[in-house]
Amino acid sequence: GAGVSQTPSNKVTEKGKYVELRCDPISGHTALYWYRQSLGQGPEFLIYFQGTGAADDSGLPNDRFFAVRPEGSVSTLKIQRTERGDSAVYLCASSGGGTGELFFGEGSRLTVL
Amino acid sequence: QQQVKQSPQSLIVQKGGISIINCAYENTAFDYFPWYQQFPGKGPALLIAIRPDVSEKKEGRFTISFNKSAKQFSLHIMDSQPGDSATYFCAAVAGYSTLTFGKGTMLLVSP
Image (tube, rainbow over all chains, first blue to last red; front, side):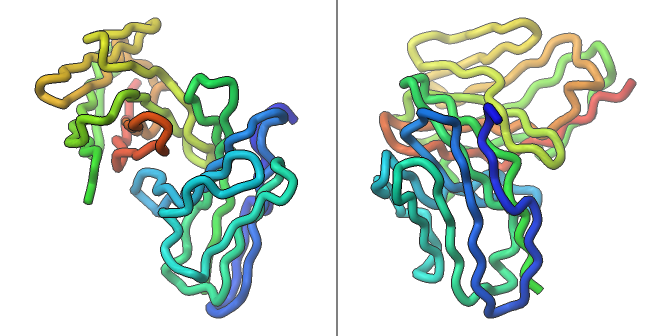
């Protein structure tokens, strides 16, 4: 497809489990962002990739969160030892062409029981 | 620390009316101010954006007003329609840093 694709769209897991969320950005976009959106809140920045490297990971809340983008395209957000407070919609966005516009996917809704 | 403050939290407007959403910021290094629109179950999508060298930008029924001295900017939706019912986020960015979003305004346009 032409847009940002995120999988899974919904993930229910138990406290303490490990989860992976995948993002496939728009083809050719070099910049990729992960945001987290809690109910009734605006998107909260987690990490930003330029190419394969994490240019800014200052938004990751703690060391249970990690993200990779090994080939400069698809990215995976990894959450270890999930906690109930991790429940949120995880949004991925990509950008390219220098316009500054972020194109968001529909998000992955994570529920930790 | 909330860098972009948005109000109101929710807004109900009659069809054909004007919807106004306000945002304020503190960081004078911000140089790009977009507004995003989000429908339920979807990701945010860019609606309109402004840079601080102009005081107003209009695209169709949507207008951004920008007051640099007051560090405030607002979104005006003219002739509001039921299809405009969504959550609106203001945002700001400084240079090549990442977008900081407001908390959002849930707009309901009644038929």
